[in-house]
Figure 1 (cartoon, one colour):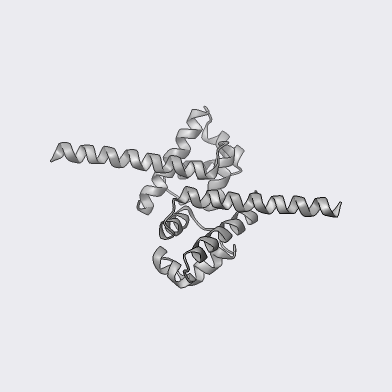
Figure 2: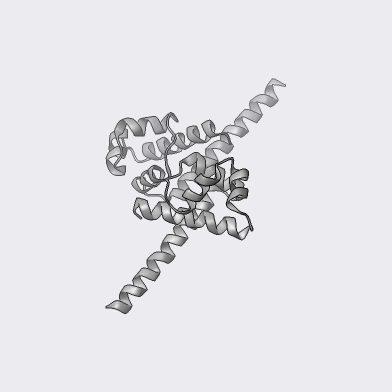
Length: 91
Length: 91
């Protein structure tokens, strides 16, 4: 997985988990002790979070940091599968 | 887990995995496309790695990034248990 994809997929994982809790970005920011603007940038894959940010977000979302990365991997796998399908259709 | 402990425990996890492969810091740096000095700083908990660095190190060490964080959690648990034991002896 390339760095842009990794950061992008991580953002999707965070957004999915936040939305599954019915939280706004403001609520996630408050629970994770991060700025709302920064949370938005993380979700859009515009910034590369640090290990500490990853941990803060996972704690706020009540999952282990490792599980947040597993969800990121799952999103990457799904994206790759869809890409393969679209490539197969195009061939 | 506080941020300094998290970064410190992550460094221990990386060092243990590197040493279990019989690799020098130079070898890990070469496999992960990071600078040797930076790998040393990560192992000593002096710098906070990004999600991308975490992923590069995990790939180089041939484990999933999520598993590298699970090892970090295990090290934190072990440290906390030892601290509790020492506290109990001191009481």
